[in-house]
Image 1 (cartoon, rainbow, N blue to C red):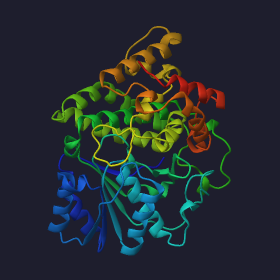
Image 2 (image 1 turned 90 degrees about the vertical axis):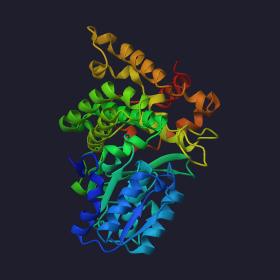
Image 3 (image 1 turned 120 degrees about the vertical axis):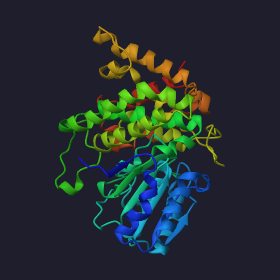
Image 4 (image 1 turned 90 degrees about the horizontal axis):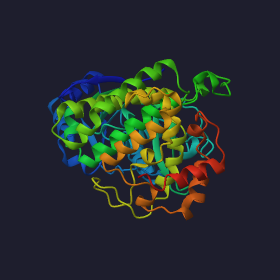
Length: 404
């Protein structure tokens, strides 16, 4: 099991300047995006750095839904800056970009594909020691502050992939629930469903003792190891919180209890899936993100097409009867999958999630390319508890065209 250190509490971000001072930081790289750079979470961090005399440079060109190109731009900034500590203030896009910048600045001789997951990249082990990274998450969804994973759109492949290694884990995740009060309603909904999918998929992943082959050396053991007794504890607890608080968090930005609880649920689910992994749902979502045409998700201030509710749109609910008790009770085990599917579909409908892939610009003619983009995602698809063929993927994409 691996996890970042976590510090939680309202206003805890004010301590970051002291943390950096205690580390002896002399040249800090602060990464964020252009929208967040104008919002209170970044302001609080900058005030703390200034108050404690910490020298820093800001990189605010992080792309929401990063690409290999945007990763490389951040990496170049990091290499030129010779930083000794990194701070990421933002959602998963910012934190993942900062992880990549830290990684490649610490391996200046490496080619970009060296650490990208196989078979898309070479999946080489990380041998150098990375610089400390403090993550300050501003959304309640990705759990990136707890994991050793950095995800990006590989533009040539038109699919998402990533880098997965425990060495990428932030040194410290500063989880300040006050930051989530600035999330627009749609961002709260979309990131909340990310928590749901992380918890459901890690809880239902192939068990760790059935994963194969066993690595010949511990350095090659994957970050995603399959469901296990410890990850299950975190996933189950995250699911309970989602069932209780997600709707409240979406409907009332001022509901501090609900938004704080969802922020913690994101951490809990991150600890779970950061070690157990996700599986088919995420693997299928990657080519959807990479092939997006014109759709722009509501609530996101971006200039490029973006779709962000992919996982919950295609989650194969009927295989998840074992987690039904988080949302309802049923006496019949055989009925659990069907009832859960209906319950979650209603959950999505109540929170106005897009009505399937057709509502974000896809048609049945796109299915072959989506299947093709799913096949290389072995890092996650191999953890599916059920074997699948191209025909199975085709049927799942077709069934996901419309939800309601």
